[in-house]
Image 1: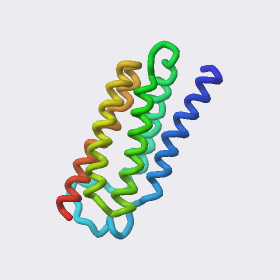
Image 2: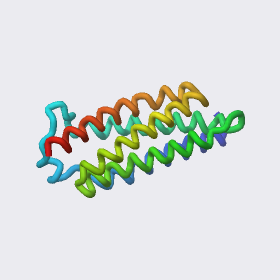
Image 3: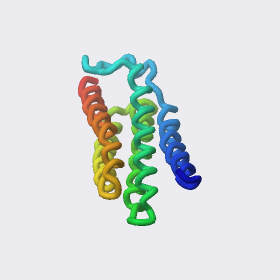
Image 4: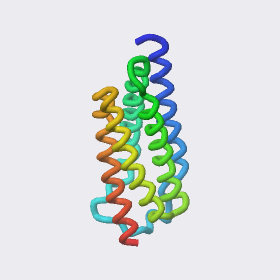
Length: 154
């Protein structure tokens, strides 16, 4: 790997984990603990490790797409990628910060659609990059179902 590719990977990791840091400013607290939740809600300890792996996979996927910039148009795919990162961070603010599962549910529905579109564009540029986003799409699908159930129960 050359120096430019290494710097690109570091930048992709910084952008992804920067979005994670923004989202992590809004953590579950007493309000969340007091909510009715479905019995299939994972324990809180699961979320940190899962999100760490997902953000790393997202960064590698974006980096793989970025590396193809000399041979194909990657701008639209990377713009969608940044949009989904912003929507991801906004979800934590809406759900935990504002304590609004209803608004978070709208956000996560839009987030899911943007992840799906990003995955499709990444796939066209570099199939491995699309594959790397599939676990993220699956986790957000699960999170959307959980968000909906929490909203419904409360």
